[in-house]
Image (cartoon, rainbow, N blue to C red):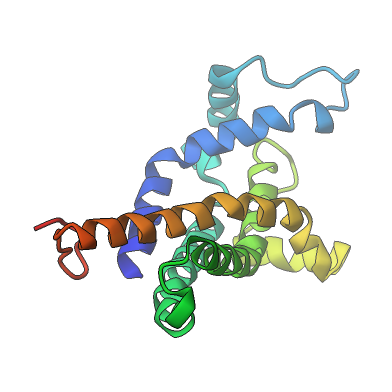
Amino acid sequence: MASGSAAGATTSLFLYHLDYARTRLATDARGCSINGQRQFKGLIDVYRKTIMSDGIAGLYRGFGASIMGITLYRGMYFGLYDTMKPIILVGPLEGNFFASFFLGWSITTVSGVCAYPFDTVRRRMMLTSGQSMKYRSSMHAFREIVQLEGFTALFRGVTANMLLGVAGAGVLAGYDQLHRVASRRGYLFEPYQGALK
């Protein structure tokens, strides 16, 4: 669990600025008050304008919320699956791809819904870079969103996120099937390392 969370946090550290730029480009025309024209000309322009207005820190606005969300999601994703699998996937369900897939999708959905408010806070904080009104922290953003828009605003878009969980379920179920095939052919996996002997 901890290694999955640490891997997600490390990846985010190196790639967060790209997610920031993608989010800014995707929402560019939506918030533009000047004749509906875009604020950014492209990826490099996002970096240039953000660094000029907010410094390097502007590229990492919402990073703390992102790390909290990734840690919660990965911890639940791997922890719940590894805990529930030996309880639920027994007897006639053992080795059943569809049962494994449904368990994986359920866990992916629960994990995603629990972590989604952090993603909302992260995206909202990203969008304040270069603006006069900025959230002071993730907690400030959380309080402002709940106070001004209600608690349910933290979950806007969660349904689409739940549908994306199908991919995560496929990964878990596929891994289980590959593990079963490898075990039947005599390959043994070392515990906690996933390496073949």
